[in-house]
Length: 162
Ligand SMILES: Cc1cn([C@H]2C[C@H](O)[C@@H](COP(=O)(O)OP(=O)(O)O[C@H]3O[C@H](C)C(=O)[C@H](O)[C@H]3O)O2)c(=O)[nH]c1=O
Image (tube, rainbow, N blue to C red; front, side):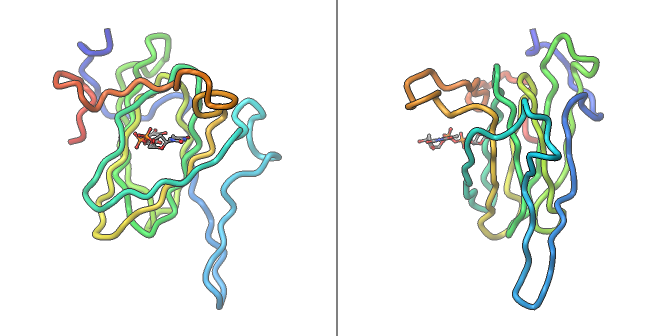
């Protein structure tokens, strides 16, 4: 079971991170979040949402069974992002990847199913995160079970936000 794994730092197979370019001008900035001509069709968002996270607060750790997440950290806060590869058939099973993303490092992040993920606002202001998952939350018409395994309330979980 993943609960007995001692996670070691590294880069996780199939996790994609890419700097987001901000096009600056006199009015402010604009940044593309995703394009159908650049993204694997299987990962194309089926919906989009934004969340706001308050300073010092974390979301996750969570994982999905079928869904791939497509996060964009654009600011105005910075986040510490945590990933753990809990896929037993992955070449990087047992690896954890930690990095910072947000206003000082605008970043796109693709998280495949089975990769446990969490992020914490490490700034002193509210932070916005975009997500364009490739599955509908709770399915069409919100009639299905939510594809989400939540680990935040497990006392003995290996998925700790250090
Ligand atoms: C994701 C989602 C949520 N909701 C509703 C359900 C709740 O009433 C409320 C908050 O959702 P939840 O408690 O699932 O949010 P978090 O636990 O903070 O999860 C978030 O942070 C972690 C790290 C993630 O990976 C999730 O994808 C992301 O949503 O929004 C919707 O109505 N539609 C949606 O698509």
